[in-house]
Length: 334
Image (cartoon, rainbow, N blue to C red; front, side, top):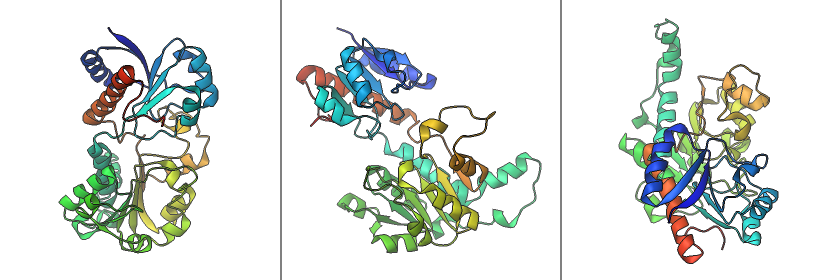
């Protein structure tokens, strides 16, 4: 028996993988390029199962309404789930499951790429040569990454993979995490937070976002303790960084570069073409104006062939288990 799942936020390049895995697991996958939100939830009316991604936001009102129109299961193809009101799902008897992890190399490789681009001033140099200027300037002089200490902030699977990549290039790798692990110790040296900040030439944020716990974890006090001319990369969650503090640090010369795959209020900025309009959020506008010292990618850390396959396959396996037993290993409803 083929079962239907409506999948939101499916990009054109993702469809072949969805097609392949839908056939493998015997699902009829219905694609929608738009993100399901509280404003367009009616697009899911009549479907028992929906698959969403990180920029699909569903609150209690929407989940209640969707249940009245047939919803029984929500699959999020993400490791994080702050975009979904899990408490509402539990109270209303809606199954909800997440993808516990996908290729950690996807985000780790982007982290490394952003760090190296800033360290070697690649965007600055190629922007000048694109304009026909081939003069070598003082800003093109750089450190080698093997002479740098790289700090991994949040040493889960993705953080540890970033650590391995930098270590492979010869860097000293240190880490901070409130919950050190033996897996982490095999890759990096854990340090208390203040020592970690003070010794890092490059800091890579891989913190999970926990609402009410670590908003603006990288704030003014944190940044004031960073080395002068250091580099900060955030490929985790925008909520973990005080963006005004980071902007001030770039403008003052305290830090040499800021690499971002995430921002706050992403739904207002990412996945839309703003090239012919003025941005409504002054923080977003300021970040863009600071190029090439600030590099922004539109949350594409997981946009790789292997990560995509992992996310879809985890979700379909979750659905198989829910169909067979009423729950699954990676349920959010506990």
